[in-house]
Structures are given as C-alpha cells and as structure tokens.
Image (cartoon, rainbow, N blue to C red; front, top):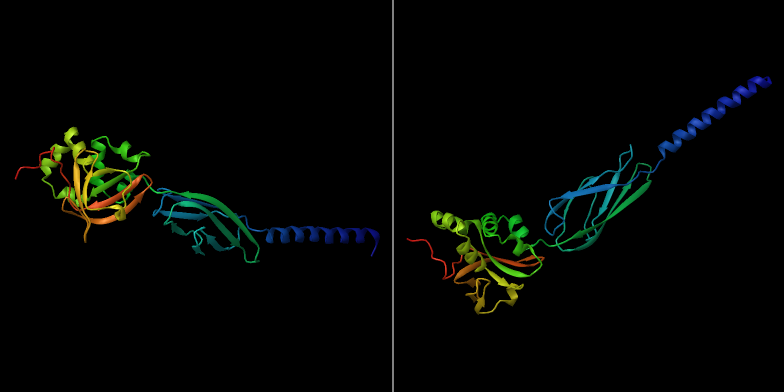
Length: 248
C-alpha cells in the first residue's frame, strides 16, 4: 500500500472513530430530570398533579419522593398532603442504560382560611351569604374565629321567600351570620356546657353530649381546621333574637 493510500485509509478510520464516538456519546447522554406541579391551591387536602418534563429521548423509569413518606413510580402522579408544612419533593429518573438524574423542589403546604375552606367544602350558600354581608374579608384575615357553619341543605330548608328578603337586608343578614361565629379557635375538645358569646353580641348555648348541640342544633362534623380558626358543621341555620324568623 502506497503512502497516499495509507493516508486515505487512516483518514477513513479516524472519521469512523469520530462518528462512532459522537454516536456513543449521544446514546449515553444521561437524562436531564425536571418536573412541574399544578393544583387549585397549595393547601392541605387538595389534589396536586406532578408532571414529568425530563429532557431525554429514552424511556425512563421514575421514583417520586413527596417528602411526607409517600412515593410513586408513575410518570405523572397526583398527590394530596394531609398536613401543613415544608416538603422537599424529589424526582429520580433512570434511563435504560441505568444512568440517573434527579430534580428537587420545595413546596409549602398550608391550611386554607375559613372562607376558602367553606368554598372548597361546598358551603356555597354560606359563602354567598358572607359575600352579600361583606364578611368575606373578615373571615379570610389573620384573626382567629370559630364558625358553626350551616350546610347548603340547612339554607334550603328555610322559607326561600324569607331567605331572599334576608339576603337583601344587610343588617339582619350580618346579625344572623355573626351569630354563627365565636372569637378565637375553639376545637371540639375545648367546648364545654354553657353559654358562649358570639360576634353578634348575644349568646349561643353549647351542650357537650352525643351529639354536641348548639342551641339544640346538632353538630354533624367537628374540627375542620383552617389557618385562621376552625369550622364545626351544623344542620340548621341559627337565628338570633334580634332577627325575626319567617312567618308560618
């Protein structure tokens, strides 16, 4: 083989080697882990959806660590946090050649305020009444309150003509709503028999038994915690003496 042929042959081998190296490097490139998450709120007991956005052409296997002891191997899992706190979420991805990469994100999970929790728990008519009485900001603030919250069914059980009139009477509507609110965060274990002053400035009567009652109305669900207080669910709308009820 003459000198020119040897040079050409070596050039071909060198080119093949370079291309082979590039191919091998591309093939062996480690995955670049990445994810995002979404949800209605970053709140306790709300569903979050985590979406893998790792950059790779390979099929990956996944290991999610949500920071609260729960894990998942789904590509795009959902998760619900049951306690407030700071959580470090970690995604580890592995390609078919067992190369791995990971990505972490800090998530702060908080309790909802009273109004948001009422909306999320579908106390729709209570929210509408609070909005009509301009009390949304009060119960969404930083001061702590205990709310004995009537269900939608409780509002629906009222005389609807009377209720319509009440919703247009800001003074009486405010008095009715404040009659359901006590200052401070009073958990069920803190309730005792006796009279309790409401924000309407008159008392409700608490009887701790099985069940607990407020003015003889049953508490159907207790201790729905919020970041500014607590909600206890009741089955009827309470009326203070200052507000005339519907005529029979």
